[in-house]
Length: 388
Image 1 (cartoon, helix red, strand yellow):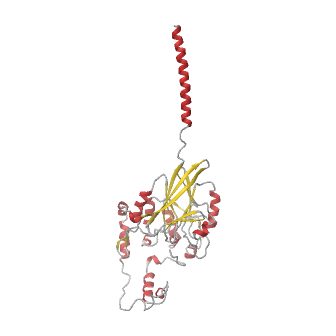
Image 2 (cartoon, rainbow, N blue to C red; image 1 turned 180 degrees about the vertical axis):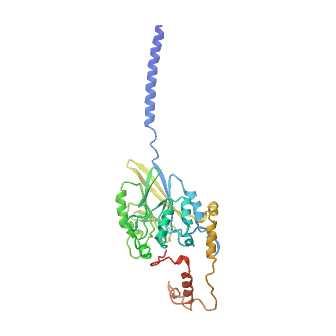
Image 3 (cartoon, rainbow, N blue to C red; image 1 turned 135 degrees about the vertical axis):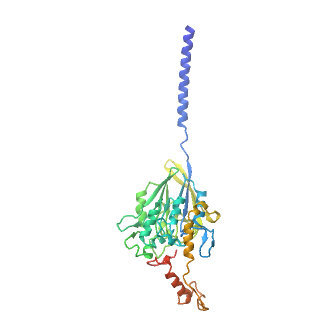
């Protein structure tokens, strides 16, 4: 009996020691659990100046054209997109050219529908979104299912027409997107914009950055402005704009139809893609997390050529009626040219960058003016014409 009691006491002590040791070990293991990733990659996919290039078809020459189209772009995006780490943005000039104007009275424009189906997160207007009246512009904004943003556009009531910016979180990284349209739209479409206010992007950005201080890890600009000021308006081109805003981590430029894969302006990465859905710009941000949050470690940019992708046949099959309507429109006979007289007089094509055949009276100019006056798409400009 004595020995039995002795053994029981020994076992109880051993059990207590084991429990203490286990508690210490478990507590220690819990304290050493990994705190999460210290680095992550955020990808921005960007387009602009799509200009109605819906189908891989040239309706003027009536032949296949796989240099770029929305249906090829859909597959290019799919191959480069990851849901938890990617933003897809577009910098405007979407529904003009390539006969896209014939769909303006549709409930949803097929180009806007494609942006929605591909899954764009952000879209801003280009200057050509203002060529058809503000009812059309505001309808397009409502059609887009992501964040339609024109940070510097105010309506007749003095309020912004859209939200001023968008905030996203990808892999715990906070991304703020600002979108400005060139202030020159008031010069090119003064009648349509008579009751609206388009502020200078410099002034609007200063205002918004005060509000956004401390609220982002990546600041992204998606602006329908090119690399050069237009009409001597400061802030309508990237150099004069970005000299005030080194806070940007990257800017998607547009409007000039120039491929810019990587250009640094005031320490800010600036890219611009080629037009007509021919390319997709891909920016990869390597972000590192420290005690004061996420910081940009590196950023790379490359051009994804859309011509290397097949069209998305499933999507394209749903738009065959659009193709039929374009073909009907482009097949209409609008006039007959006959006779043996030359379209331009001898010498009118010689010499300068702007030969006299472009502006002096001639059969060519008469033909052009007659066709232009009867063209549906050309009944829209109310002010000076923009070039891109």
